[in-house]
Length: 220
Image 1 (cartoon, rainbow, N blue to C red):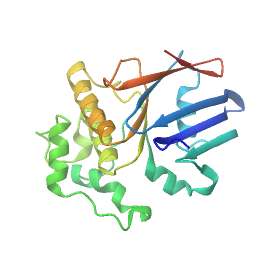
Image 2: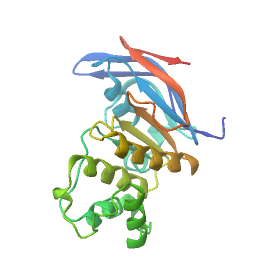
Image 3: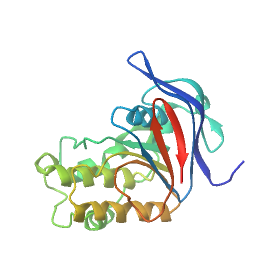
Image 4: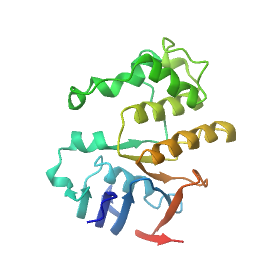
C-alpha cells in the first residue's frame, strides 16, 4: 500500500434523484497533494464529492481511508478525518469564537483539546480576518468573510482531507489568495485537498480530474 495514500475510491458509483451521475470512478488523494475536479455544470461534481464525504451514499464500488474500507469506519469518525465544505458557506448562531470551536463540541472530539484564543486569532489573521473580533456575531459577517471563517473552522479541527466545493465562489481575487495561502499551509502539513474549482488554486495543484457524462478521467 502507498504510505502517503489517504482517501481512495475504486469503481465508485454515485446516484442522485434516481439518476446515475458517476459510474465506476477511480480517484486517489495523497498526503501533501491538491487535486482539482472540473467538468460541465450539472455533471455531478458535487454529488461525487458528497459521496467521498459519505454524505451521499454510493451505490457500488469501494471507498477507503488509509487502506481501511469505509464500511469499517463509523461515519462520524470518517467526517472527522474527511471534511467537506459546501459552496454556500455556513455560519452557526453565536460568536466567531463559537463558530471556530463548534467542531469540538461534537462527541467524536470529546478527548481533543480545542484551539486557544491565540490560535484562533492567528488563524483569523492568516485568513485576512484580523479585524474580526472573536466576540463578534458570526451572522453579521459578509459572504466572503463567512467563507473564510468556514474554511478556518475546518482547518482548526485538523482533518486529513479537505473536500472543497468552489469555496472561492464568493471571494474576490485578493481574498481568494488568502484561501490559497491557508490551503498551501494545510498541504505542507501533510493534508490533502480535492477542490472543485475553475481557478488554478494553490501552486501544489497536481493531478486534475474531469467529470462528464458520468465518466471520471484523469488529465495532465
